[in-house]
Image (cartoon, rainbow, N blue to C red; front, top):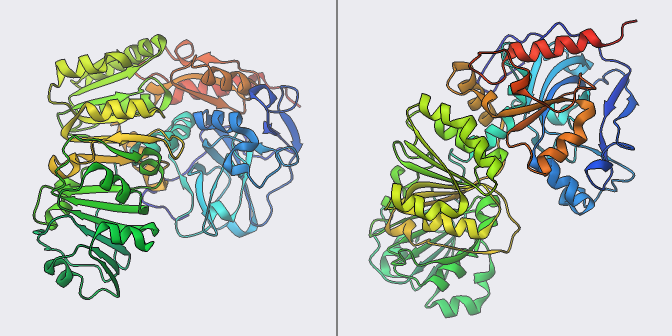
Length: 563
């Protein structure tokens, strides 16, 4: 089987049978609340035939609970994924963070898979140009077995990948959420002009030096000087307007642009209006904006979901705006990082990553509103901070201003917001250094105004980024760190349970009773929610080891009736 960047000899993780049984137990969701998952509070037993020619049947070794699962349950039929689907007639099987073992291989795939292959899976896939998600609008892992077909398995870069035998199933299931966090710190938006795209250049004043190659594109110029006219002279199409008023009156301003250059000092209202014209994946470059910390109203959801990018420079060189040092995505080495909303599952992953990151921040300030989550952050990660020689400060959200004033009086090098709250984003922006980075991680509804110091991108070399989701490469990057021993995911696993306890697990996450991750082992039907601390071997360094997992699964196998 072809690999994206890693190749392992795949072996069964335990001696458990890879024979596919005639019955599959699943938790279908047809709408309603958490206790409406399944039928009358129980999983459903469904007949299961062998793999068809285009299918692979895999055993679900472990599946973790994600807050997205709860979001889907809360929204039900109102969720955009189910706009064209009647859940009552066609229930969904949720669960997208999974570890798999191949059990049955259809004829088409016998040259690429075999029974016993261990796999990880990237749930976000593209099908005929449309985004689909395994565990949301395609059947997922709240079950014992899953059928995968060509939508997931086909192509040079399939959405499944092999995993080594000496990594626990719980760790493999946690690769996906960790990969989403990993994606927040890679190059996740554009940092150069789009060749052949739509370009808008607004000159508030003249004097910019056009020292990069102009894209041969569809160009719109507002108040252009001779220099920009010469720079764009080879454009395929060009429209010229003498003033912003003339541009606005033309109707051209309503067209989305791939790139917008704002050259010279534009006020906050003008900058806001121009930013609204960015297309999905758009880039705005500001040269000498003069706004400083003055706030510009933006749609934070667009930064998060539409991969908008903002670059700038005090002036006058346009090329300097695209220099690599003005396109930082990683946390600053030796700096101070503030993680707002660190107490939830994804916030904990951001905190965990920062603590174990080589050449990462020296001080991590982690905030949460809930006292029990604060205590869990301190208990779970303070030893890790000491191990890596880093300072971890765990505080309530309301203490952030005072804490930053004491520890980083010039502001934080990096601010990560892991909660879908505009007030929290605005607070984080105010606590960021002039050359800091603001990472918007948690998604919020579109159309909510958010005041951000966008001018700092130009005057102070600030970065404002957002990301959502991940890809196979992100999961492999996390797996590589796990294999080399520089990242131990078990520190974020708090509870394990069997398939029958799925509703209890969902309720525990929904109510915030569990701060870390919950791993469901579908082969264990009757295991209640159980703290990993109560099950792990005494004195071991890691919270949940492969040996712990195998001991639990072997005990479950021994208790199953024979014959």
